[in-house]
Image (cartoon, rainbow, N blue to C red; front, side):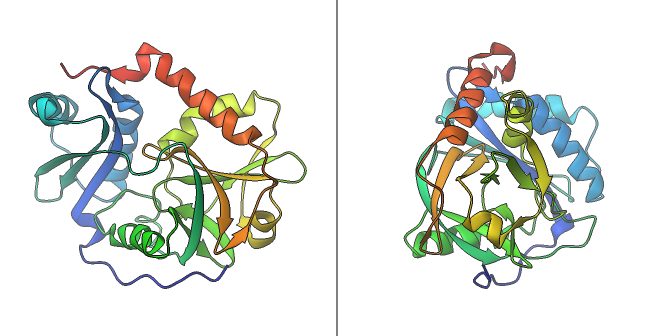
Length: 256
């Protein structure tokens, strides 16, 4: 896993902070509170001062735009210049069986790493490289280990029945992953945070990428090499955990 190259960024990382979350015409915004907590934490790391009552402001803006929105994803961005940018898009890939390629991870300084910052071009370009290669997902690699995904958090089920997720400082703290971690931990599978090295990935029983848009999507091949043994225990567990969250009214914030 050496990874294909990704070109340099366009916008300075500290020029904006953003988050992308699920939107439903029927239910509203999914896991909105969790996204707000991370949004504030990332803004602080990026030295972006959020305005007072910013949470209410975001919600009122989404409410004002709600009639134009489709089921899918809402992207909420706040710039260092003090502007809000809110947009909506439909799902591309969700809860599917996928193929992936690897791309070289852009390594950020400590206070930028792992945040949803403005210099997001590497993620967009990685997604485009995946599409150009005829696959669905790009996985970022650094020092022969998977550190993150272009739109979600990769997790593995290893030969010993342990679930692993990335401990890399470069990995974004995924809302979907952290929202279902308690259920993963109570399922009987040991759950570990660590380095998803080349050997572990190549020999895993199953690989799943978790994200607001991707849901729980199973990776069956990476760079043309098949991985996993075809079972879907981890996928099923993740999808069932997400479904339980979806069925819980407290997971949604209404916008009507």
